[in-house]
Image (tube, rainbow, N blue to C red; front, top):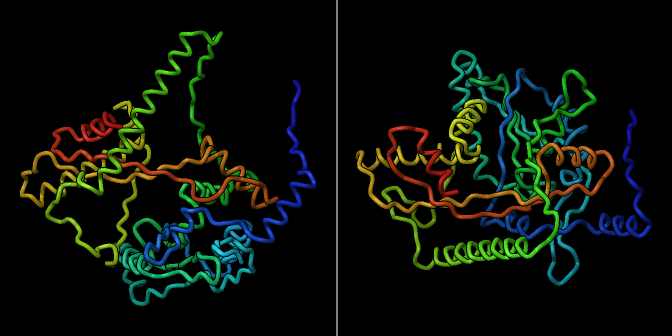
Length: 374
């Protein structure tokens, strides 16, 4: 049996000089990244990690030095260049971990949470609510780690990561988080996820007239669907507005304090529903959102839902050309070691989806209704 090893070619001198010049000048921020850091938007990401033991500052620093600090984005600040547009760029800088690690003091709540973990859950909820209205300091890399040494119903200690959305999109950050972990059986190996099974695409033997007509027909269908979506999108701010409901937010609601209430879901249950209905995981999650919204509005309206409710959600999708977290994770792990050209940044799109608001006797019908319109 023969084994083939693929060795990456070293970059040419021209490519190396261009990369060095870009590194010295700084990588420019993408349009979405520039939008996310505007004060009127304040688009920040908050994600919560639970640990089985109380963490110390020294342990956190040691872990960050061998993981996130190896990534160039977490060691760079956003600086305007000298052009007339003053475009923001990522410029490498020296990171002082003492400025990025915050150790919270629960006080008496810690002893209460040891007896009743629900007290710890409420403390974490209140703490993250305060982070939602706080601003990050852009004179240093826009990320922080908050250590909450308090017991919750699911962990002995909680770490809250607070970073600006300009650092990257959800897929990139989740892949980076996954690349920072290793297997317990082999500490030198990265963990793996099940790969998506893809059916092989049949290849036509010859490109005949029938194949050409099919290609033209598919192109016309895509063009028609795109035209309809553009018309609906343009019509939304003009006259095609959502139905006004009892608890619809008023002008200025975006500046009010926010709260984060999270719920842990069992992925096996979601996969079971997906396989039973024959839909996707996204259909199940959107169906659960539709069910929660329908039941909430049903209580608000005294059990009688208005007919023909138009409530839409803006769903964000990743448009990075990767085949999954596994491949992106391999690139990010290599980036943290060698500075490779792994794709990183905010490459996202969004579309409007009408959420079905109705009463269903069978809870699975909510996911079926979503699968029928997606």
